[in-house]
Every structure is written in C-alpha cells, then in structure tokens.
Length: 353
Image (cartoon, rainbow, N blue to C red; front, side, top):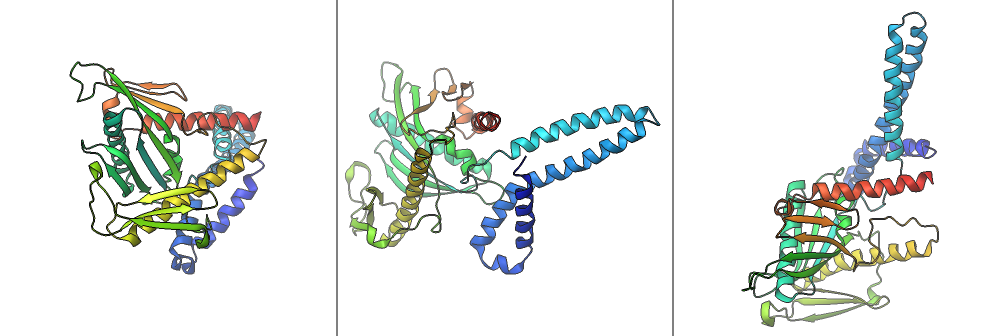
C-alpha cells in the first residue's frame, strides 16, 4: 500500500493533463496519457470507495451503541473493507510496463513440414478471430504462404481501438512453441501426427522507445517470391534490414512498394530490439522476479492442441479444456485468464514474500 499516495497523485496529474485541449493536439501523447489514465482509474476508484466505506463503518459503530440494528451493518461493512483492501493490494502489484502496448505476432512453421505450415495458418486464423472478438484491428506485415495454403511465416500487428484495452496484457503469454496432434489431410492411413509452430509475441515499440542510428542499419533489396519460390514481383521491392550491432535481421516482402516494406520492417525491428533490451535488463538484475508463466526461453513448448480429443492444454499452468474447436475460432479468453491469474498470484506471492 506504500505506493498508493504516489499513484493517486499521478492519477490526478494525468486527469488534469487530459482536460487540457492542447494535449489532444498531440495524438501520440494523448493516446499514451489515455492508456495511463485507464490503468490508474481502477486504483483511484477502489481507494475512494475504501475511504467511504471506512467512514461508514465508523458511523455504524457509533450508532450501534444506541441501536443494535447497526451492529449487523457494521459487520457487513467490515467484510466489504476486507474485500476492497484485497482488491487494492492486487491492483497495486507492479504491472508490466508494456501492458498498454500493441503487439506484433510472428508465427513460423516448425518441425513437421507441410503439416506444420498448415497449423501455422490455423494459429493465424485463431489470433485474427480472437482479435476480431476483442474489437482490435489487425494488419498483415509479412506473409510467406505455402503451396498447400499454409504459412511458412507470417507477421501481424494487433492494435486496440481503446486506451483501456491493452493488447499486450493478453497476448504476451502466446510466445513459445505450440504443438498440434491430429491426422493430417495428406495422411492416408489415419495416423495421428505431431508437429509444431513457433509464435513470437512482441510489444510494439514506438520510436521513442527504441533509438536506432541509421548508420547501424544495412538495408538490402531483392525480388519478392511466393509459394514454391516463384517471383511474384518484377521489381526489387522486398527489403532485408540488418541491425549490425546486434545482428538482428528482419525481412519484409508483403507490400508491393519498397518503402512500405521498409516501414513494416522497421516496426518489427524496433519491437525485437525493445524485447531484447528488456530481456538483457531482466537477466542483469539479480533480484528480478521470474514469473512462472512468462517465457524466457522462447523455444519452450507452451501449449498442445489435440484434435482427436478436442482438447487444448497449456503446460505452464496446467490449464485443460475440451473446446478446441471453439478456441481455434478465437475463444481464447479462458486460457488467457488462467495465465493472467497465475501471473498475478506469483506477483502477490513475491510482494508478500
């Protein structure tokens, strides 16, 4: 609770800033302040209600000496105070600073050949449908399809329309290896195959988050290609950006113009460099809390999709459900809620430990 006065002061300042018309002339600043306001508002509201109920309790106890009926009311107010204090403790747990950010998702086929690429396509559809259910917008930044309609690799940006609806807070748990167990369409004997696809979830970085020196970039252009390697463009519109200091490479060929592919590539590069910097900072902090559900090793198998049993299993928190068909149609709320709750529980345990 020691952080409460500081956060309430910040809430008042953000509220004051948002009431200034001049602030809204800068769309990026207004958006950032709006998101922070949405984060702080539940804390301020809960603290205000807690103060009110505590005042009511004092009054009820005074009146109970004159009228016994107020004793039961006092008991109810004590219970309400306990609930509000627990809620406030949960709200005051330090949040991931990226929770208010939008997300870049990279989905790549892994072991399993064509079946893995088809599964990568299924994961793409799952995330697109989930985003649609959430009211988010999506943009395909890069797409490498296969001859059978799967995805060798695909990169999408997912953005919220509202300041209080943070994408990263929900999609940050999707990074890792996703495994599928099913009978492939090409399997004539009806045998169940296991294959996998990798998902990389990155908070989308704004230019102010990551400073990139243009002199640190090597940019190559080449002709884009489609399924089977055939050329799909007669000009050198595909772009490969290499960040020389870190060796990070981003390739983009989805757009028809070199400029558009370069802009999309820079968005992905900034997101990767931000994630890399944060991982290094966490590793350097000896007392950094290691969440039980946040994946440090991105090769970790996080989830299994079992088609014969219509089962989805998340191995990090022991979540299991038998509605795989609905999950693949975008019904990810339950599994994401389980991951968020496990993360909150770990944070609360760390705060009290």
